Amino acid sequence: MKNESNNDRKSGQFFNRTLARTVVFQLLFLEDINPDNSEEWNSEFLFEKLPAHEEIHNFALQLLIGIRENKSELDQRIEQVSKNWSLARMSVTDRNILRLTLYELTYIKTPKPVVINEAIELAKKFGSAESSAFVNGILDRF
Image (cartoon, rainbow, N blue to C red):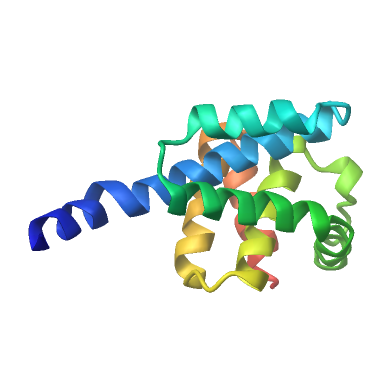
């Protein structure tokens, strides 16, 4: 049993939380560019892309629902610290990574270095060449 726990830590739980953040980011991105997406489609996407693991699904849903419910507050906080950068001026990728990260930093008890590292990795993977530095700079102001 102890080996299974160690394996979960190495390849399962942490990898799956990273995957959950990635899938939530992708949904936020899609919602941002196509606000008419149906909730049903979003749920299908979430369950299709994530492994069948209740804890990971709950984590992803907590992120997604929380960001949606607190979007205006998150956006306001992002704009307050992003000097000379309105949300409309930011890339769709960067603003949604910032929403996701700020929500997790504010409302979930994930260690801050983990959340920031995950944000930078998302920016490197999905953003422009400058995205990781931009996201890191904004997050540093929080």
